[in-house]
Length: 327
Image (cartoon, rainbow, N blue to C red; front, side):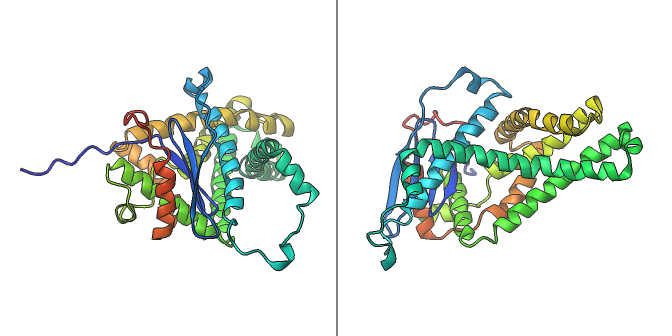
């Protein structure tokens, strides 16, 4: 008789690569594990509200709320990892006994405020770069070609499609240029380790370095895949909005794009959940391919010490109830 392979578990546990570390978010607990400057691994449980609001359970609304909460939590974890990764490292002689600046003292005193402001700034920069910049370029192009041609319905479709393609190109270039930043290759390796560790856990194998390294570094339920879905869905939503609203001028067009962002995020989140649950379906597998392809940029093959950090983060959030984290 042929051996029957066990069903692969799909977990809701997700993570984020940090500076020399990883954050894992489980159904009941969240943790960060960071390789400190002295070589030891620091594991710390980070705050996670047990209370789930009503709107976090409503389809097409929950995605935006969870995305924002994850962004704030991720920003907090990133700032902590930056400090932890330097602990134990020898300091330059000129920094010995040096008092923190007034800015450092203020940021320490108002840490939660700084985390929230950093997360909001990240959202604003993303909206400006990936939503408003492509639209502005196309908007200026319509002024050059003349309003008579741009006001036709078929040209509205063409312009919105061109804006969507331009948005994809900007996102791709952003990832490529980000990869050139010094030290980002280490972050990509931790991202790969996060995916491998989750895949090993979903397969039901013991979380050992040897087991984890044999799994692929690409995972269908990744934030990179979510971002691609957001950009892809935005093409459809903005095209429909352009047909219904038409050319209403600079201000209304800009405000419309901002207002529609929560709708786009909500739809993208539901599609990601559906695709994640039905990854054996041919269409769903096709939808996940672009996101997996982009992970060739945002992940890298980790080494054993990096996987050890991923294991520490993962073990801290695995629920006691085996069904509590089923996707």
